[in-house]
Image (tube, rainbow, N blue to C red):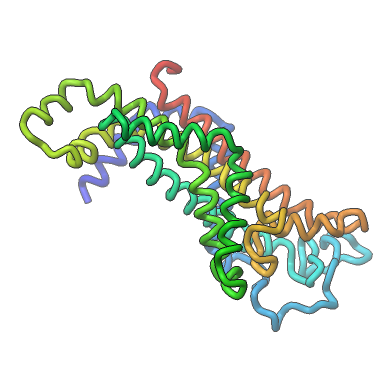
Length: 308
């Protein structure tokens, strides 16, 4: 318990916390991000309606405008309803949970793969380094969204049709994650090549510490600074990629509300005047991605001593 108090004391006395609280934009971004995360993962508690409970969904409530529309609005649905009669606010809260889950999981997967390959490539060098970096160079020739589409299409072709909806979320996480490992690998490789020439690594090699222990105990903690910045920015990119794939119809199933799916559904009704079905999910996506990007930019500047 005392160690936790000491850590908190050091954190609140650090330059990182001082820079954070002195930037109103960053504070607002952090509040927005935290609020959306709490709402998303506490959806059953905070959502006004359960969008998965068919007993409370009435098709007669379909396409109702927001509640402030005095002529056709319904006070039960603050932001209106979609084409199935689901409450827009509730679908946004539940949809943000799917988008955040895909973004977080794909970033963790990409980070683990990229950091591992970057450490091995930078420490071992030689042919191992050449092979890993040539694979990374080839992948960089393809846009991330195109690679994710390719992986998703191959997976759908290999898996039985009846398993598509059940495994769609896992395929989406793998597709987005595998398309984003290169940035981590190249950054960690460069940092590892610098760190392995320093005295503490050479001393560890001289006394016979195994390479695996050197990588994990000595090199990994010293190359994680840039990785955290990349992960924060990649989180926003992963959420946008998920929304793009779901908008194109190759992401999560239409019955599973994600921000991209909601925008795609609303797009079909946009020109008929039912603008709220796509506008509010799109606004939620913009706020979430913008706040995460602002936090990532601040973290990059805060962890770069040259910019202090």
